[in-house]
Amino acid sequence: MKPETAGKMKFGVWGIVCGAVVAMIIGFAWGGWTTSGTTKAMTEKAVLASQAAICVAQFMGQPNHEEKLKELGEIDSWKRAEFIEKEGWDKMPGQKKAGDGVSQACAEELGLLIKK
Image (cartoon, rainbow, N blue to C red; front, side, top):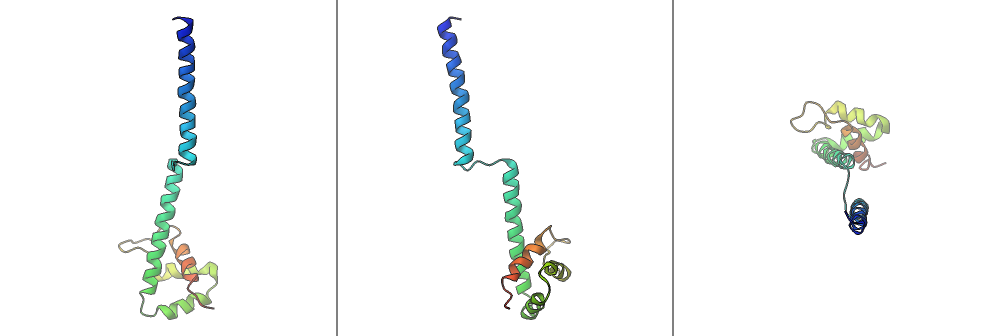
């Protein structure tokens, strides 16, 4: 191989490497690219938010929801999740067991509705 060709190959390879690095930096910083771990965390957060909304809807769908809301307001904030679990509002339709953190997220959202 001629020395001129070797020099061109060297600069060509370095151009490809630097271009790939710049493309990744732009993609992750501004392009909306995410890693699988970030995507999994975002998905879990979205599922929890939707399940908490369903829990609130199930709570508000009870005929005596105003009384239960007052009762929930009288309970210490750290025990409200247990109250929701006991009543079963954190279970999604068709589920036998509620997902992790649903009762706590539901209690936090219901806490916004409590009038003191």
